[in-house]
Length: 352
Image: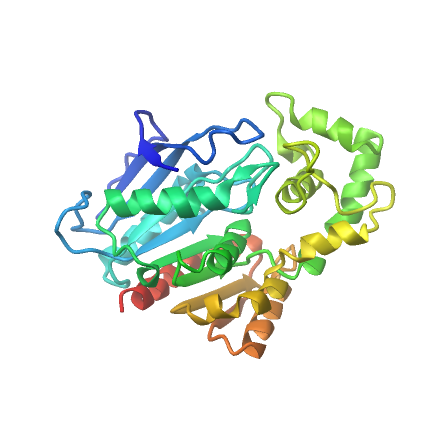
């Protein structure tokens, strides 16, 4: 597999930075045959702190932290101002300019799919997104930019499904990442996912006559807006990642009875095998080798991901894995402004 830069544009950027943001477009071999026919040509943003050259020459080599977006999110959202009229990139730039972080490259990865996201896994229903990140994006960045190209100097961070991605990539590919930050990452699936099932069953009954096939036809119509039926879209999109239909590429096996919302045990158990709380005991060596594990969530998280963070922390503690957990007053959106400070912690650990 290989990733190469191509001509194209990702989005506009005209606000001055102390550092620099390289907005590249790359073509992925891993995604070229994805069953959803989603683009193999992807934006890839790389932030360089002040004074760091964009080439991969003989200058100082830096750690790199990979940023993963949440479910339904697009890479351009890192450039969208918040209520303080600051973007995530600007917050990171201010932090680096003020010397509050060890110098590092920040890589923003696009793993959007027309089903909302990939959960950063390989799936016969969405595509090979784990391979895309680990076997294409990371080698491309290491060849193109002045990185310290080793696991010990490479971190991964994300919010929500991006936080989930940071956890599972670190466990499934221990050769890739040496530190992680998970902000309200999907965990403890019986708390964050199972409550969606009865709500999804109701919406399926009331809007689609109880038919998943009717819903599938709807989401394949050009211009479909997932906000028309967010619970169904989230349920179906995550099912595409966890339980893809082996007989129908691009489709999902749903983990509950569409009439009642009651879990279908064998399918639900397969979902649970992807729960970071349950994965951790199978990946002790990878987790024990991490230089830094940072976990946080808001106490008022709408998806109960504070409970997921706490359950994961308890499990990591039981396994003797060093980590930190912070529960703060706030909801699911409250983690965004906390991400730069966690990045600073990762960069210090990765610089050693």
